[in-house]
Image (cartoon, rainbow, N blue to C red; front, side, top):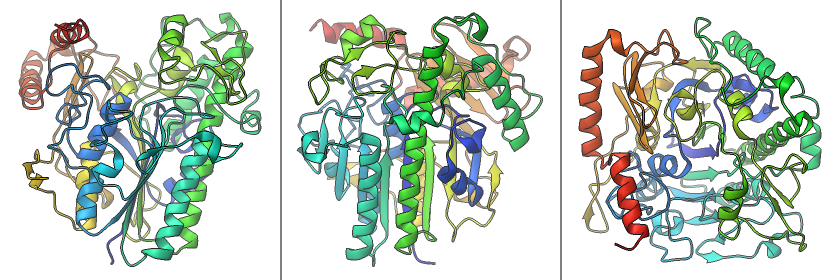
Length: 528
């Protein structure tokens, strides 16, 4: 078999159970089809936040090792520089060295240098072609930092009907068609990094209309219905109990502004729907150019559902940095989650907030930012007709983002580099998932996480997790993956063992205690 093309598709701020093939209400026929003809993973994990996940995915390291331990600020200490480390290698760099063409369409978000220098931009980190945004979020109608190759471009030149999700999909299709026409003798690596369904809630009216009334039954009933579908699909053990509704939220029957609340989820669903339409065009281009059968497609999300509510303070912070003050036609943009303003159009800027993120992460606890299952569990769909024989199957082996690099290296017949530009590269942290494709173990025994002081370590069936500034909790994930029965008091020896493993990992991977990092951040901010 010839070396496969590899296509990574990443979406932004989506919960574990939103896709149709993972139990959700969103119509995702194209992703569902990939799942039916490929594999669905039930225990694949990200790192709970956008940019750390992207850094980990692309480098095969933990985010702190890649210098993206928090966000896109230089916090004055290694591990937290907000700029992809020079002693890392990206998947694009590794595969390009192995004879692959490399293409990227979408969100970069692993450098603080949005306007330059460009040493950590896609073209400088292994991609032959790039179209997308350097920063992390923004309007879908007029995103900040829109870039082609190495040059900033004006959205006005991209057409009146520009919509970022469509543009990402269409550019990926163009890359596939161009490659088939000009470079088909070599395999390609493609990275399609959507911003959907990250806030703001922007969607086409025809997509929103598909979901009108779909969420009127409210979050309580919808969470229960999702759980039932997930159990029927085999994604969730029927013995795992559904977590309680978020304690900050009322029962649906007591909620205010229910029309607006339902509309928030309708627009969110429409965002994923539009993404799925784009995936359909991408898969269609692969099929039409004869490249689908030997292309490994992997689809995943960068963190769990996002409970961030855009209030007045948030609105002040994002205007001018990642949001425009006006639409392309000059109308003022109404920032913030105002129940008097229905989200969706270009002149709105809202999020779907706590209650719907709670639905997205059914049946798990917590959200983006935290490392309980709701923050880190992601769908992973793997589709490769020539390389995966067990179509429609589930895979329950735990794996996490660094394993993607290792998988790409194995299936491409590439070699992980010892050095980059004359400097030593950190050793790869990932384990190839190719054995999992065959239904075999892949060798990863321990998984680790840390973000904003929220930390976790998992070994086998045992997961120890902390929600900062609280203490360690211990869960038997085989019996209680929804993390409702803390058994740390019953197993002090396990807590000690897992604590030692975590501390050794944190020291090796440049993880700083969050309280100490906060002091460092204040010093940097105050110019000390």
